[in-house]
Length: 266
Length: 219
Image (cartoon, rainbow over all chains, first blue to last red):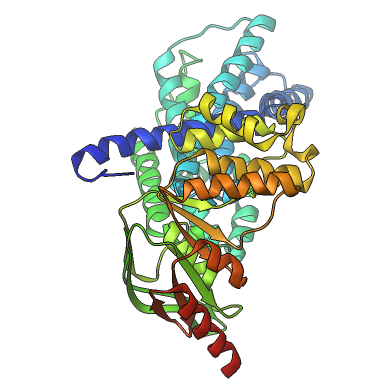
């Protein structure tokens, strides 16, 4: 960058970073999702199969879902937003390792790879969610209440997922033991996030415990957009909103702090 | 200009820290091409990566008032499922280079023919090396970093590479790691010897080579 010193270089630096993130997104779209069968298919197949299996199992065991009449809609409203969180966390968490070879280009930073994944995954998840509810609507029309809590809940899930994923890039890099433990602890996350039950119906002590899980709040908020009569009084926006923003800021701060370590092989 | 300001880089290994460079200050002015010499494992490649900025010093800082390349002919980043052309486009984008321009340049330079539109995983190692060298030559840098220059392709292609690279050196400088005296003498004017964490600068590459050989004879 000849003579790029002073205020001018900051503007062109931002421009360059935008170019780099854009290049990473295009590259990832064509490699992860491109040529082969897989990629996009799996991104949509995961929620479709999960919702399908839950519907089959639960409709065999009970007569009515906890809300409304449709098992499919109940599980879809639970799993879709949980899936947004989890797949965002997984994708962001592997961003640096998956692009390690590209860090040999001095212009590419670990931060760029993370930003690229967050943007691409956000777009992917909204398309997947739209396809999921679109196809449910075609099979079994439902009343769409309020779009605002739906958008807010999905945004919270994405923000929290990105933050957890970014922090885990650093923690996993520092300790592979922690990586194993995290995997084990998170396996039952799906069971305790209110995907197939409502926290309102739990007995008192468990109800309070489970409300420490931010995903329960996010799932509850998401559902209020689909079920106009469902109030989900337990949703604490300050708690979950604060936690999501904090986790993203903290995760990105860790990545910045450990930038030098992340550039080196584990 | 590239300036190392009290740069220390160490790696912890089994409780002890091994220093590649320790408290080194050094300025590389524009107009000089530098050869880096040192024994195996002295940390020449690490020093090159520090200069490139792909790894960070443990302490001190490195100031770059110049546009520094990735390692010449670097091909580790090529994605096998992308075509040669797609891989070139990616590099063009991250360096803010006109994509069509670079795609056309490399197509002409690397002489890959139809294979240019095929996935890189179908390439032979020679084809990959030609593609990588083409990309390095297609983008302008003030400094080219070279970690052991390796011959690419047949005699005709090698001649072309040497010619293009020498043209480049009218406007650009190189920082080269090599164990081959002739390569160092061909491309470098000055030299730096890396030994036990200290850098010694020699304004004449021949003196650097002699000092390095003396080090090797000593131990």
